[in-house]
Length: 150
Image 1 (spheres, rainbow, N blue to C red):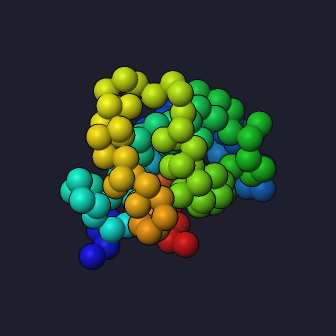
Image 2 (image 1 turned 45 degrees about the vertical axis):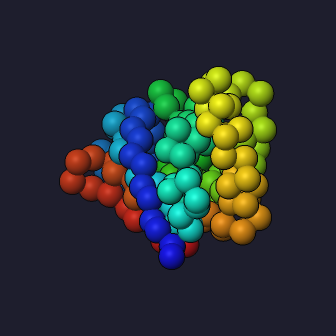
Image 3 (image 1 turned 60 degrees about the horizontal axis):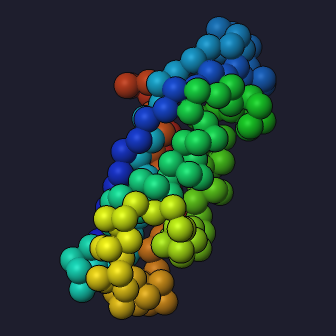
């Protein structure tokens, strides 16, 4: 049975729209809210993926690049739509990112112990359980957001 799990993140960033005429062509900032939804099989340990690992992957591959940055330095014409596409492109090979993360020697000792105790499940999840991105929702403000469904 496949289960969908979602983690919510936030980041602050500035941008200006380059193909737009109006107030948003001037540099301004937002506190973005990002919801990333994954889908996968529940493993023997009762999890699709540990939320700590999920958070580390998004932090490393998304938030470290976008938080407190000028998005125009990273994304051409950083509309919410283009930012969501950029995020998806960075996370779309989630299985590879998960395998990378599990091998990271800088993992916290508690996570290493957890992974060691469930290594068979982790190995199984890497080969059999195809964890994939099924939705990215990016809020530019509390009342305005885009949804990307691959």
